[in-house]
Length: 326
Ligand SMILES: Nc1nc2c(ncn2[C@@H]2O[C@H](COP(=O)(O)OP(=O)(O)OP(=O)(O)O)[C@@H](O)[C@H]2O)c(=O)[nH]1
Ligand SMILES: [Mg+2]
Figure (cartoon, rainbow, N blue to C red):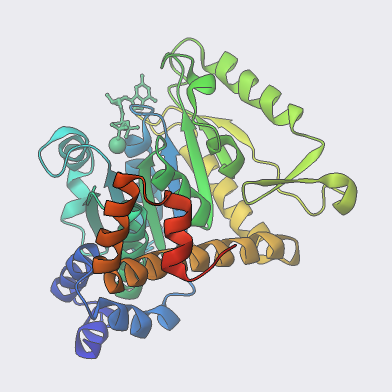
């Protein structure tokens, strides 16, 4: 395993693909490889790109990739497809859109499909992003459809999150899942070549101004009376673009970089801490659930039968299992 980690760190493509697979399948022992990688990945920049289906996320990712590659930056892309496991759909479309990057030795693109396990998707995506950082990606772009809790979690644990909105998709701005607005660091109003982009941008600005008396710290709103200045908080800029032509995309990259600079400054320390804490507690929840369920299979069956027969209620059953009476 440490041999595998070393090969990933040396930039070996096959080893990287292999570790991505092990991480995706949670093959026992992959965590040791992750431990070996981690210290070498702290400098990587994880950028989440989320938004409604069809908003233009992949097109934007392709454009951001081009800009970063023109600067010589090595880039990883993680495309999370919650619906179609490798059977076409969004991933096939993404492959076509990102075709030219597949032959670039400094771009590593990896798709993640739903595993079915609770919380599995986001953990896989984040682990794979970490593997790509180990391979040497300085920037990892993580594309997710902003519809489920998993996606929200990815957006919340990325360093910088770009939320893509497009006019003409239902109620566009209103259709954004609750919580997505709060985790946006930069808004891209894409398809500015179509009618309604200005209105969508105005809607967003309006919504943001409604929240202007609060500070957005990592999805939690904290009264700014306490922090008392805009010095502490990051106000997400709303930028229009036409991803299909590449218009406005350089400005989006600049805004994301400004966010990163903010994050790494003293002012971003609360957000950095909140992010590290969330990543840790989510992993802890996973590990605890795995352990408790794994070690108590028989007891769980016995208790489930009792719940079914009405001999015990599920709340008491949980207390009994955990040995608490709280
Ligand atoms: N008119 C216009 N169309 C665009 C623009 N950007 C993307 N599109 C089109 O919008 C459609 C969806 O683009 P994608 O990049 O696949 O969107 P997505 O958000 O990745 O979609 P999913 O991954 O399926 O959720 C495609 O047909 C694109 O060609 C734009 O700026 N203007
Ligand atoms: Mg896409």
